[in-house]
Amino acid sequence: MRLTVLMNAGPWLPVPPPGYGGIENVVATLVPELRRLGVRVVLASVGASALPVDELVSVYPDGQFAALQRPYNQVCGVAQAHLAGVARELRARDDIDLVHDHVEAVGLATLAAMGPDAPPALHTLHWDLAKHPALYGHLDGGDRVRVNGVSAAQLTRAPQALRDHAVGHVHLATPLAVDAERRPGPLRGDHVVVLGRITPGKGQDVAVRLAHRYGFPLVLAGPVGPYHRPRDLAADAGARQNPDVRFFVDEVAPHVDGDRVRWVGTVAGRDRDDLVASARATLFPLRWEEPGGTAVVESLALGTPVVATARGCLPELVDDGRTGLLTDDEERLGELVRAAGRIDPAECRREAAARFTPAVMAQRYVELYGRLRQLAPARLPPV
Image (spheres, rainbow, N blue to C red):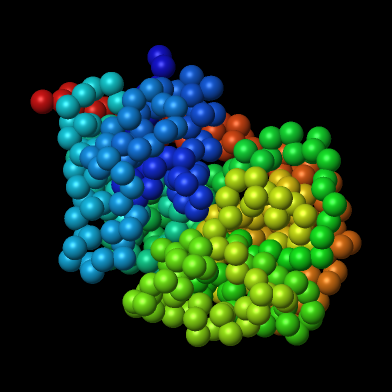
């Protein structure tokens, strides 16, 4: 029997997203491979989503990401309204075999509360599991709701109640890993790249200081709060209300001189790939337990060695000394950037092609879907 999965990507950005969009990019990477494996996919997202699927379910016509900058009491109902739409859809039909949910906290809480009239649900945990202790510490999804991590390290930090519902982990993937071992590498530049949203946990303040101390050119590529381009941030007089903007202005911007250190904003598509593929290394001076590491596997697929603090999923994704260099001491990162030239780019691409393709990720999820359906009780018919 053909499997029908409702893939819940949430209301924040369309799938695929324009530029930055972590979870939405994961969904956009996973869904085509699931469909190639014969899975029928009903996507719950916003109406602007352009990803080819079998059906699209939406509450909002466009992404609601900008609403996250409004006061809590003005935005707290956005995700709930989206999940209410998902719940209505699930209760009205009997052809959904399984829900694969990606919406932080409210997705898990809603699906757990639906009871036996809902299909089995797999909730993928994309974030730091120290968050939401009241939810994760008392989760009761019975045999119907299960969770998976995006790394083994992530799940070790989960409260016991959450671990009791876990069915394993699935590493993230990138389309760049497909045939990566056959792709010739570009000419290497001397610059180092830090990819991702500029926020204290990503450690861009460490990176800019190291760039000046060790004398390597550094490019920061990623948004600051809701601002994807430097001119957008400069034009908003109220920008400092956002904590990530304050971090950038106070700790990072004083070191951004346009020469040794540049902030280029969000870089997407071919421009991002060229920036990373031509870099000496990608740098991850992490101050938090990185759960998934999409930018890490993208870097490896492009043949660019990873230099990082050995936190979270990094030791699972990077073979220290072969595809990158890891350290427990952030002050050593500058020395490792200098040593990154000893890592063979072809070895990075081979590793990505073997471990981080969308096909590998999709096959692993199909296995989890099968396990979840075996564990879950029979669903009551819709009313």
